[in-house]
Length: 354
Image 1: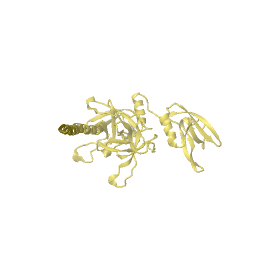
Image 2: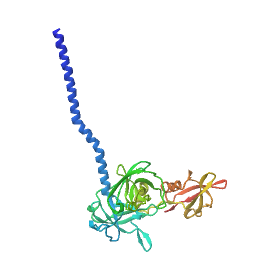
Image 3: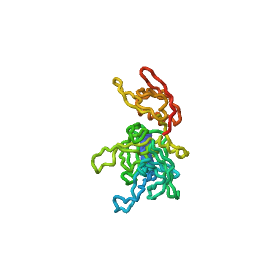
Image 4: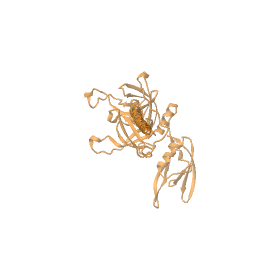
């Protein structure tokens, strides 16, 4: 009986000690592993902050050519920033063409040289490498001591954006900055009369002065170049900014930059047919109103109904524009199918150069 009680007591002590040992191990794990988990949780935010800081340092302001006093001379900064640009590395700056254009002799020209302001307030000379009016892009090369150039740079994304993607931009809204704005992609396939290519509509605050600044994804890669806004505010204090912004697609901007760096004239395909919308029953269709350029002598007739290009059905002007810009090259021969009366005809056209 005594032996059995001693055996039971020993078992109880073993169970109790095992429980205390388990609690001790758990406390050690909480005290030692817990901070590691918290550190791991902080890592993405730290990487995000570094990525954003990199984009900020890679952004430059495009300075006004003429000597203009700042709006608030109390700050003692006698400069005016008219646009934004972003450093691609090796001193190469990409910006919007309209952000650098100047009026000379009644015409808008892209100047040979511009001045830019870096994030650390260095004023640098940059020389034009190339520009494209069709896409509103200009490429410049920084001059002077390389140690003065931005130490940060951005790279193009290999993928296009789509609905709801998170994006941000860095620039000089209203000539001040650099300032950051965060938002999402709305419609990645929209158009304005200000440029021939499609545009990416974004839901983030952009202003005058943001033009030419980079639109970046959540990895800090360049997915667009800020192009325009649609003014939505009526208050004088809020004019000049909007949450309805538009950017040039990064993949198309990259085509211009690559062409410039290869010593080629950047350009896109031109077909030369002018479309008009016609109503047929309860549907709107595309009629050919006029043929110019490459299509002038190809055999199109006014009133022909556009059906397809290279057997890709075309139902909207946007489809035709996108196909020509993004899936063809100047000099390529395309086959356009039209309906003329009750018959369909195919017409071959050698594409021109924008």
